[in-house]
Each structure stands twice: as structure tokens, then as C-alpha cells.
Length: 126
Image (cartoon, rainbow, N blue to C red; front, top):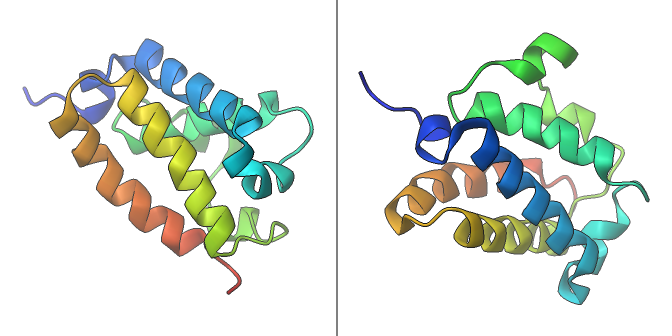
């Protein structure tokens, strides 16, 4: 049986660690201030939804779809102006959190490439 990315990073515990670190970095890094500014004051709801989404995205249970329906990420984020700077700050936080919570560099690379494509897809302003 092939292992999913979800299983490879430690299943629920691994995804939770990644999400927790990601939002901590977004909340505290001065170089992520513009990305942080387009999020709610309380990041707990965003973290929970990201956890649900990432769980399914990485091959785990489809928790996000069960709770919220189809992700429709671009339309759900349409109210947030996401330009190159916000996108790059988001990626800075994600990549740093990924590198800090997933020990295997090859596994990080497998996750990083499609997530970077997704981040570019989410950009909705120049």
C-alpha cells in the first residue's frame, strides 16, 4: 500500500504541527505583516479551516469537504486582496513552517511544489 503525504508527515499530529507553526509565524514575523493583515484578528478559525483543508489536500480524510463543501478557494478568498507581496509572505510562512515541522527534505519538496502553484493561483491582484 502506498503512503499518502498525509501519513508521511505524521497524519493528524503532523498536519496540526504544521498548521500551528504556520499561523504562529504569520502572526509574529514582521516580514509577514501584509499577509497577516488580511486575516481576522483571531487566527484560530483560519487555522482550523487550514488544518481541515490540508488534511484532505495531503491525502487524508476529506474533513474540509465534509464540513464546508467544495473548497472553492479563490472565491472564498475573493474578499481578501492577495497580491504578489501577500502571496510571497504566505509562502514564506508556509515554507518555513514546513521545513521546521517535516524532517525529510524530499518530502518537503513534494509538498512545497503544488502548494506554491496553489498560492500563485490564489493571487487576485497585481
